[in-house]
Length: 463
Ligand code: FAD
Ligand code: NAD
Image 1 (tube, rainbow, N blue to C red):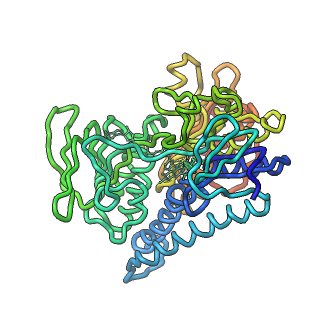
Image 2: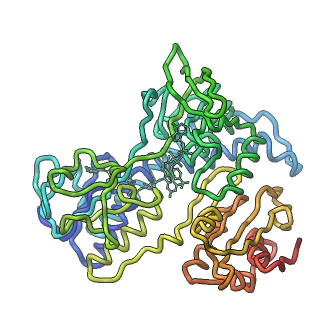
Image 3: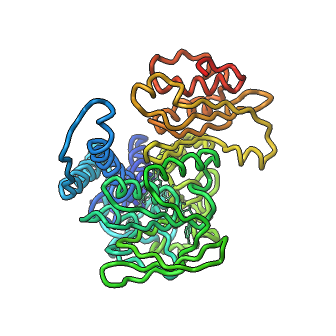
């Protein structure tokens, strides 16, 4: 095995492995250091992929039990085989991580197995062996944020990793944090039969997302049976017998009470993973939140050391990490890699889905940008009616003066797929009129995006 490379990437998540592949395509000799037994990082092993596998399986279970009678499909005796569901999830994960291994072989990328530690510019230690590289990329991702008074054991008090591995449906699951992980994994276990209570510090769910979408989301999830304790702080969680006793404080009333749970899921955000990397010794500077500070070219303050993905600033999303991986590899190869941070979609894979791209109304107001709104509900769409999926709406925000699309927020069926059209519109600098004048196939859910675009100028056709 060679001990010198053009590029050593530390971490094989979507940021790291994609950077490694693009660099290899551009002719560099590349190694990727990964300490897990499998490639693919958080995303493939304990994040996006296993959670989406369980979301899909649990949706099927729920539909079989509750959603088919309205279509005249009558089935009885629906039962859950959780062992099988979990085994399927493991197979999906295995196929994906093996897929990355295959891509490494195909692109002649060397997997250095073990934990990487930076010894200085151009030098990386893996398991006591020193490797040299012209460029080093830190792509070490993130871990769950801890919460004082709540000690995770991954059995009774779990992070997302433990919540993906439960071998029985909890009677009562209490989720700390009404963000993306809490609501996705809360949905999984709710559909499989758990009572789910979400305790959220703020007075709303999914902070950072459009406020109107968040309100509608809360109403729909409440209708599905999820319980919410907003403006509520968890001060401690103690394992007692087979369960957990949580002490919570209402921030509005100032009262304290205890809640009994079978399982507690701690999902209050994630923090950059930089432990044991030797960053202090190498002189790489972090910000106050522990993220590696980078410039517009992903360079740290130490020449030859770059960083991408969850470990740097920006949304902690797999596709954001991938875009950065590609852009950085191109920059290192002397090209002009670039990421448009304004056109990165975000999707919550609940039912219905929530998706957004660009700016929210709240952000536009704060920056004093004048805008028009076009909104269209799924209830007025023929395909949504045929599917029996009429919850939600598409909302498009366009610049008042130029009509350029500034943001889009969707709650509804296939929101995560529908948002791609608007991400492209933003990337191309399109106006709402451009979207409104594109011929959209009928009958499709995409027509709701077109109608919302038409609604910006008050000329939606089907409402
Ligand atoms: P990571 O994927 O975290 O990979 C970093 C890798 O570096 C890890 O494998 C780690 O073992 C390795 N590593 C760390 N330190 C070292 C070291 N010193 N030496 C060697 N290896 C090291 N995002 C989405 O866009 N869509 C989703 O649907 C989605 N769902 C998610 C669901 C869950 C439950 C979670 C937890 C996250 C989800 N995310 C999702 C977020 C997504 O997983 C992350 O944004 C993404 O994985 C970040 O990629 P990354 O390459 O920066 O780091
Ligand atoms: P998050 O930031 O989405 O949500 C955390 C929530 O916890 C927030 O609503 C916050 O107000 C709340 N909170 C913080 N401290 C609290 C406290 N003490 N008590 C009660 N509530 C508290 O974080 P997450 O859900 O843990 O997800 C972490 C990251 O993973 C996110 O950045 C997300 O981008 C990524 N992720 C993405 C997807 C997706 O794209 N579908 C899925 C899962 C995770």
